[in-house]
Image 1 (cartoon, one colour):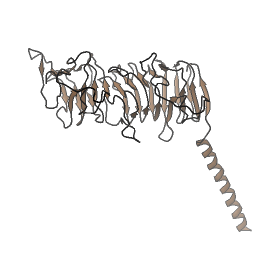
Image 2 (image 1 turned 90 degrees about the vertical axis):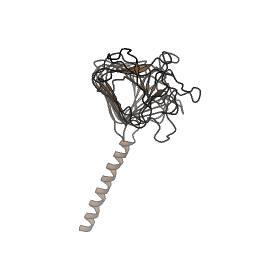
Image 3 (image 1 turned 45 degrees about the vertical axis):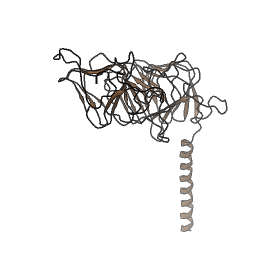
Image 4 (image 1 turned 60 degrees about the vertical axis):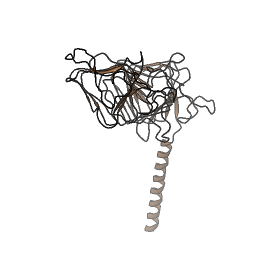
Length: 375
């Protein structure tokens, strides 16, 4: 009799454990609920796992705290472009996923996540299916978020970043940005665009870019490490059309030293770079800086005050200052194949503008300055 009781107890525990596991499996493989989003976020709001939030209006504004849970999916229909989500000064997006359950931002045509939510059968997502997110707040965090198939601007030929930081900073970590469209000009938007952000609290780390027009466009005052990836980890030949970190010109004075450490892709100056008194631009071994030829060939330069400001690491192995057209160093960054070639005079050179030199036109001749007008 005792043996029979033991067997009955074992059977009950086995069934209970199986039931619990099955419930967990059901939760992990749930059928997502679709939630249409047509109004602004004006009170603290949570977007949950196992739900697909479909943005069905031209733009929604985030005026309060929007918390997005791991596993949540955000989709944008075909009429949503340009500033699809606009975060105001009083707003905040806290989008923190996990490696197992990233948060997804993608096109309504992307049936891989959440199923066929536009009920059109099989559909094919593509670049420029939706716009992007504009950040006007210092309170936004994106971790383990995947962004796909956006970049559509307000008019033909224009673009919109996946994340645009307009004077404000944000934290981006372990995110993927893939198949984003955008502008093909030298000064066109990047997928992550923080060209007007001068706050060194801005951070982008451990993130991946591939299949995009232009991955990053940043302010020269921002630090960039060497943790980001600029190709598809599953296919190393799949990169970006203009595979570089684009840097805007800035006339204001930086307040801290700046480190540029990325070595997979070049830094691309779209204007002159000024390193003000007492500050350092710190480069890692293998860093390549390319200079574009707009507004005119031979115009753009790197200037600093000798004795007061420093380009630290200029003589390290693999460091080059060269033309935007130079494919032999850093690859085909201007995305034109063999259509153009570098030439002497493509950019001005590295200039010392210290007041102790009467000509105010002294240029350095390091061995790694290539194709400059005054090498």
